[in-house]
Amino acid sequence: MRPWTGCRALEGSAAPVDTATPDFARAQLELVRKLRREGIRDERVLEAIARIPRELFVPPELRAQAYNDEPLPIAEGQTISQPQIVALMTEALDLRGGENVLEVGTGSGYQAAILGLLSRHVTTLERSPLLAERARTLLRSLGYTNIHVEITDGTQGWPERAPYDAIVVTAAAPSVPAPLVEQLREGGRLVLPVGSMYQQSLVLLRKRNGRVSRSYLGPVRFVPLVGQHGWSEQSVRRFREEFELT
Image (cartoon, rainbow, N blue to C red):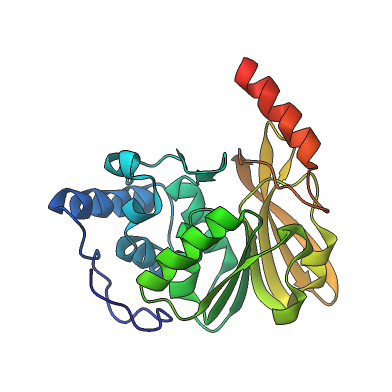
């Protein structure tokens, strides 16, 4: 794979990255075409998806499915989100290239990789040391220098690098975590799924004049956000036990 330097800006028209087989490149191109047909309009978001090798962010046994428009399981009971949802959430952040961005829920690192291409700096938070280290290693191998992976309770945000121009949460919260709103810069955007552990609404919040407006982007289903301002580990464990029985 070609090394990337900085990964901070898209120059010209991005082409699919070198991948292990031509089939990946064709599947990646078809995915981008599908996302465009289904309403994704931000060309910078589409170019980022066309550049990032999603097959490297999924388990080896699932790489043949990497460019299907569907979520896939990774480790620790987590998933890599459906590409359409990744594109929708990223588009809603309205990134121009100079932003300081916070991601809550690193998971595989795929969303962070997209954000790293579209913004100046990304802080991504993951409570699982295993997932955090895997994502950190992969992102470093791809040449990113503007993404920092931190192991912490993401529902509390990361005050050290606040305020943030944009925040994205990749797990479902029962309500909007107050620390994330507090760490959002004036004029900033926050995108996250909010609702029960069974079904959520994707919400876009904008902070203007110290007040927060809210709009809805559609129904979604994410894994639960665990933490002080999210779901408790006990409630998530009960949910997973019930889900496995149904």
